Image (tube, rainbow, N blue to C red; front, top):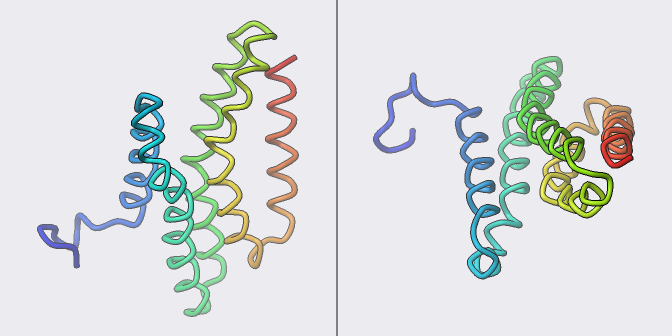
Length: 143
């Protein structure tokens, strides 16, 4: 158990939220501080996926593949929310500015890439469908 916490307060979702919050914090730093924190920034999506993978694997080992699948999908929701906010922001810009800003999708994509690796053994078609959905949303937002 984590120090200073009781069992009722413990939640894997809270841990995942903390990774996203830390990632967003680092992204908001000035360019010079962001450069200094490059290693921490790059590690957050992988750490997020490692937690998801550990919980998912525990469900799978217990023979609860449905729960494992549901957990991975639930873990994608915060990433989807970040993506949707990003796309809405692009849609509110002019076409030219949206094209430039669209490069910042690279701040979200690593989360998806790592999570796709986690979900692949449970659902072989999810990644392809999600990639198509992301691509279509980006194209629509920048046109």
